[in-house]
Image (cartoon, rainbow, N blue to C red; front, side):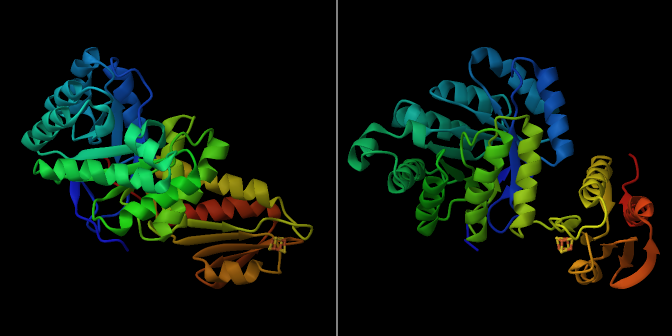
Amino acid sequence: MRVTRQIHIGAVAVGGGAPVSVQSMTNTDTADPEATLAQIGRLAAAGCEIIRVAVPNRNAVAPFAAICRASPLPVIADIHFSADLAVAAIEAGAAGVRVNPGNLGGISELRKVAEAARAARIPIRVGVNSGSLEKDLLEAHGHPTPAALAESARRHCRALEAMGFGDIKVSIKASDVCTTVAANRCFAADTDYPLHLGVTEAGTAANGVVKSAVGIGALLLDGIGDTLRVSLTAPPEEEVRAGIRILEATGRREAQPNLVSCPTCGRTAVDLIGLVNAVEAAIARIKAEGGRIGLRRIAIMGCVVNGPGEAREADLGIAGDARGGVLFRKGEIVRRLSEAELLPALLAEIRACTVFAPKA
Ligand code: SF4
């Protein structure tokens, strides 16, 4: 695991061994704090831990302040082109600020942001994007190569460190997965700044989740990455759910529970796809209601080839067969079930292992 310095976005620790946190970005009009706060509430319920909000102009600063005051999540201000706007957002209560130092207009402008962030005791995220690389690096490297992107990030970090500011997180993003992975590996090799991972402009949910899973997943498996955002042309709740699934798939977060199911084949004797979808939806509902399911692994398998083995290894399992299936609990056979009994039995077992937090 890469060793990084720790920063804090509000109460959320990033880097320094803290769990990898999931971020998203609102797509409501920042000038409409009610709509933005409602979306932040939905994202928090989905599992988002840090939220980024665009502050595109001066008119957005007062509503942004209202959002920061009422948000259940720490709010990062997303700023482009204007150091003065970044300073205004910091003074409005941002828990962090994301800038691309390369498009702020020079060192004196970056210094304004660093001084305001230091006074507010909040970190700066240095965002490097393949679409907005500095001219001299583009000329030297020909195009936004991984080395050019990593050098851009290093250069901005050096500039901030020269100002005595080290409360830095870095993101290096490209829409190309291989470039993103290579650039982050390159930067991670000789720095200790926490990294925010993402494949930018990854596309629709169908394409973007795959690209993000490959790019972010590769880095997480390398031990690189301290926080992440899955960027999708889709409702931001989908970004959060995908981010959580990537963390679970890479072993960086324990799945609760890990739902194992076979792909089905000509031997499948029951409506396994319908059964698994119904169980997955029920788990999502329980989680949305704040339930904690005390099962690490649920296996739903279609036949006797791999079914009994997988079901026995799980906390709760079904091995389908021509007459319905066999229910397993903690490696032991509980009882034989007809196909119609499979779903009710699984749901009853899951509910019996679920604890709901007492209502405040
Ligand atoms: Fe096919 Fe059985 Fe394997 Fe499922 S467990 S894919 S039904 S062989």
